[in-house]
Image (cartoon, rainbow, N blue to C red):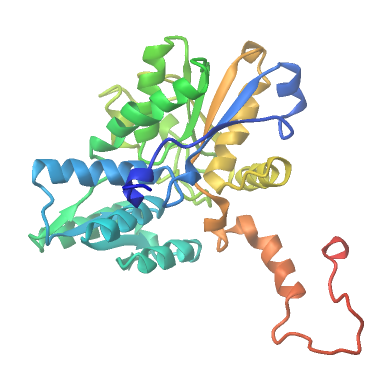
Length: 352
């Protein structure tokens, strides 16, 4: 018998070791690589943590009250977490996303949780998404803007939960912590906690190679959903106010490294097929960077912890699944072949 509700199941996700997928260099270095399986949160991603934290912080302060409508602009996973929380708590919810084909699952899932979804012009990018949402909230006084990119309840929940979980689960040994940069909340909160526990811990932030704005490069289009919004994040800016974004360290962040869109797909696929861990493209990117680190001489006998932010099944409209979808279309014709005269076996994927 239990009195838990769905919100109570957020957090305390597993930390697992991987072996088969490691590069020869990582194996030669005897590097221990651990993946934090954040897709095992009930909404399917690490963003469930901040959704819970930000809404409950607003409830405690009185900013969010019964009868109000919760509004957020998002690249998807935070929107799903917020929509789930709003369904569980009884709030109306509006999620604002760009109108892009890879967002199909996010649209469907948010709608299934009962949220309204507003889709904005993709050419306007994140600034347009932000502007539309702020205008919407300004015109409706009973709307509450979650504001994940600026809400301090975002990094704080990673400091109080994600960081301590990783430290305990790893046996209090974390030498490198690798995470993607979406809002910067995970790197800020979890990274701070781990560096307090081990001052020699290196926190590595991962961006798309096509959008390395945190080292001063220009933003160009990419397909790694969830990271690389194209603008420097508030939380990482505040780690060193006034300091330009260039290569090197920033506050407790040791390095900003990158993976390309194609590399993120390659490594997400390898994790699925060699470890049975199905992750999204941003997790493929973070793992690719972890493998780069694991080949360095200085990482010999070290422990690298990688955040797997979301589950791969959420990305069937993404290029990650392109080859499998094409194969499945050929394997499962519409209408099906109902002949009884053509033998028993109609398809063998090994011969596709």
